[in-house]
Length: 141
Image (cartoon, rainbow, N blue to C red; front, side, top):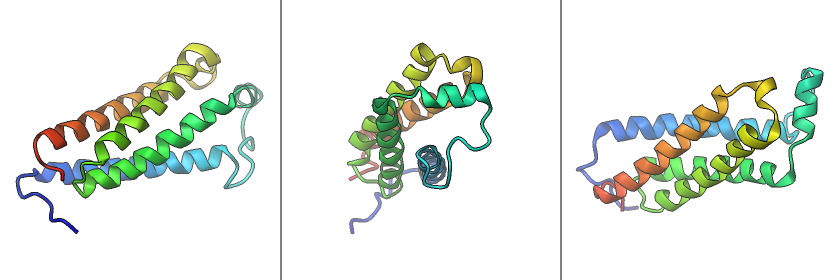
């Protein structure tokens, strides 16, 4: 295993750890939404059930790709690996597709609100940018 470049700032480790936890939560949310932890419709109101039932397969696929790539990319960022950049870019594209569908096409904003799509999109863009920045700074190998 290659050593971590000494020139990388300590804050990068903290941010990568937070990203790891954030994306682990995203993976758990995805697994919950597909029924791994039980009935994903349990406890939902009728409008929430209708919104959840209308999700196309490609959106569920984008959710899976975005969250698993985000988790994998966060591990790469923590380990200062150059491959974190394309993986986090893939995560960003998938999550922007997912959140774009939610905001512009699903009608779910009236049920669930805008805070989660904005937060998820901003986090995905930030992590992709950070991976690019880390690679350009020579903090990843």
